[in-house]
Image 1 (cartoon, rainbow, N blue to C red):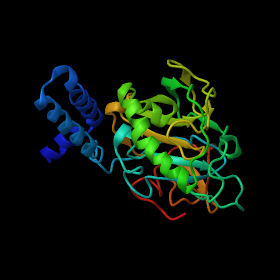
Image 2 (tube, one colour):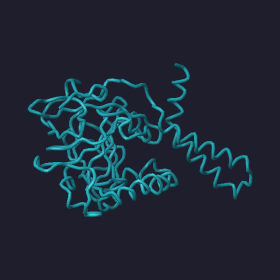
Image 3 (cartoon, rainbow, N blue to C red):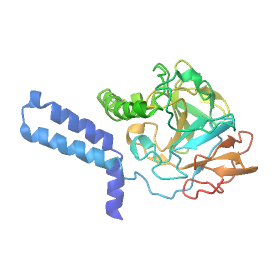
Length: 297
């Protein structure tokens, strides 16, 4: 048990280890010490390995909030399906979810398309949709200058997305000490109180309506869904974490009210099954569909 706690603590500093490793390895031209360069490589390897180590105790009670979107959406990479939902604990996204707007029930959403190779972001229904504060809070970070790129949801474009996101955007974020700024794209972070911070990523360029220090109420519009950062198509990436800075934050499970099959549930929607956000419901319970207890929809 003691070693597990140590591992979880070290996992919070995975990105720090990689930054230190890069400095030691590529700084050899300055310090000229082979041993330091080898130590740097070891730090890089350790940091990458720690990406997959949980940073907090699993199975915690989900934090119940309101939905950050309205209308009909498809949950992708949901913590109701697997944890960590995005395959890594990095940047506090253990329990993150991607939300894709699918307003027409007659059109089935698919993650990949044969054609076109890429499309303008404004051709997707999610682009420009409002993003709402899921609870009262204070803005601790807000940025909105990164461009909205074309989609990456064809097979050739997806390969490019993986290379771009895992190599170029990650390295650029590391070198600028920005804790994934070029991965999450335009974003807002809210302090919801009691050590809970909400992250809204891939927002539309120029749409962010809040700034650091602003107080917001549940239901206030924070910005619009975009396609900035490491994104295959316009969607909202949402997660909760226990620190304002994603560099050493651990993810927290969430739950929000939603409707599916004529029933209202409170939890994390999953299974890529469309749901309708129940924005008018008060978050009072943590019933079926919670991150560690997914229910069929």
